[in-house]
Length: 435
Image 1 (spheres, helix red, strand yellow):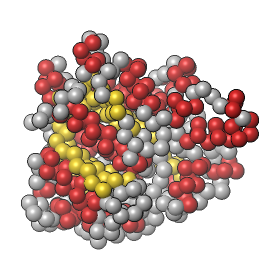
Image 2 (tube, one colour; image 1 turned 135 degrees about the vertical axis):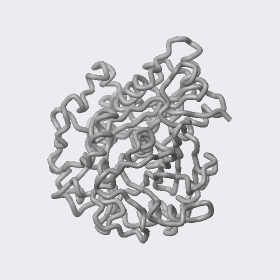
Image 3 (spheres, one colour; image 1 turned 180 degrees about the vertical axis):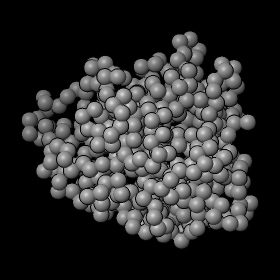
């Protein structure tokens, strides 16, 4: 089986546009969560039970006080004609890919290289604006008012499609859409394309942009969202904390450049980490809730470690899925304890280092697994563990080091990232220091 390494990263997040500013602000305990109550149309936003979200900062909408050079300006990445043809999630996909390709130093022109480079870019929902606006227009004004771009703009695989067309990549062109596990599945699936010889390089990740009142209404009606901190947005997402009461919807994108090891070495690429393990499972239990015992999460983690050939006791850091829901966080904590204190694990809970970066950026839905993989890789590359913001009173029945509020320095040789989604779909990724 061919080995897979990571040679490039790109990200657009509620903390900033770009890897370095996002990572720096994350380690400095900044939050990207803001109020959405003043968005238009205000009559729709103000009636919602949750009015906080993780919005990508723009020059005109920059409540996070990000340097303007690190805010989202579509014109920095796309021509006006491309902006008209792409939904925002696809624009984010293309921009994050450009960052990652530059970071990796991979801009092939030879036909054989283009044919050996593929894309695996997914989204959980994509962009609801076009669905909603076109439905309203069609209902009021009829067939001739429907844009010919409507279907291309709503298809999830057009994120991957636009990337492939822009750069001429003719390798595997694939899109996962598995709710909040999408980003992790996209990266894991892409690694297998390389491992089995279908590609030498893969652009892999997830993108999401569904900051829309219908999104908040839908999740709100299912009682999934944080509602107690509308007056204090940065406190709204509280993974593992006793006052957690729901997640925060966010937008953004993250991309990894995955590469076959020997291919990367031949061209002298910088290797950030090795993707050593990928495990999947299904809860087969409930539409939205995990099993109370976390057995689905346990299986995905166990399978990822088996695939990696890594013992539980060798895992230095776990980037948890933990979204800030009462049931989900507790189930994942139970699963991690079962894994890490079982056979070939550790004998002291306090040695288990776990954090949830959603406290800082909220839940990027289909992009969550991708950005959290980025953070796991950077933890390995830089020996820094990102914090769990708003964690003042852990209340999930375990005594882990949850890295509360402030980042910690720690040598990380093995990191695992968890992602779980509605429908009981689970994925775990294991990244290791390349040696």
